Length: 480
Image (cartoon, rainbow, N blue to C red; front, side, top):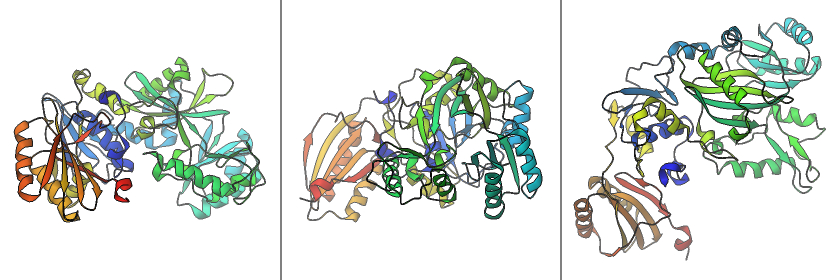
């Protein structure tokens, strides 16, 4: 059934980045029957640090309780907990006090070159150089194996990056994992692999990167995070005595970066079944160490020699969730469902609707500033009725397609419009109210001449847009 599946990719085509995170959680609550409202920039919020609210700030209500969300963060994640998590030094100190293993490290002003080098030599290489308050892997340099390498990276950090303070940390042997925790449960474990290519004896490294990026473009999370050829990547190739135009031997694996951050070309692989209970318990304990944080992401390096031990390197209270939903391998974990179970436990066994709403259109309307909030219409109740309409026109135009969409919205019709060729539109119509469907057909007859054929619901159609058409062009048929 759809309720147990991941959203079809065509629904997400025009939803990107932080908007996609917000949509997935909001949609999960709405399709359980919760009342959904979206807010724009002018609305006050219970969240501190919440910038660019429009399209990412929303509420869900079950009649008794109302909860507010900003992106993936709900109102059970406190402002205090968020503030602590944003300061890496404070987070480490708090975790350490709670008996959580954290990396050995120290904060410095980036201009304190001598002190930085002295400390790195003291704790021993390899070390990590990273910003005090950076995100998305920006300015993070791992696997620094010598004083000379540290000096080179420090110079780049000092002259090319905007950060004033940095952290030097001991690097630990093992692979990095993002574990998402909800309440007392580690619900998903993602192994973040460093960006890499494997030689084939034919393509250059640059060409192999282009092939990788083509694969990433098909993933809703990775499509906007291509592997970029930059300072860090070129510097990493030097370690292999390679450059971007070299051809590698077949089977040779080349790590393109020293960090596994997904925004820098890393890959998410769901490995929950392979993670020890000790590591999952460590993730839960780590998150609970922060004040008032009910759910979030915990980054752990699992010891390469002992799978029951790990070092916690970071906690994210507004953690990205889409890569749990769409990993490169492994069983997808629908984090939004886990979050809704936590906030609205009475909805756990509720039937989940196969409808979705026009989120991109909603954002555009909120962005105009005309309204401060939008309440999404309640879900239709009853069995889904379906009809297939074939419109034969003198010519299919953008105006006629827009007219069809507005007519569908007016009559509360859901479905899909397909431009078959220059003279034909195929409509798949879905409604739970036969009167609405009949009224739509009556209004349609006033505008177009068409043929009607009843049909059963196409089993390939998993989800239906509420009050409007999802439009696409049948390219194959259009070209004939």
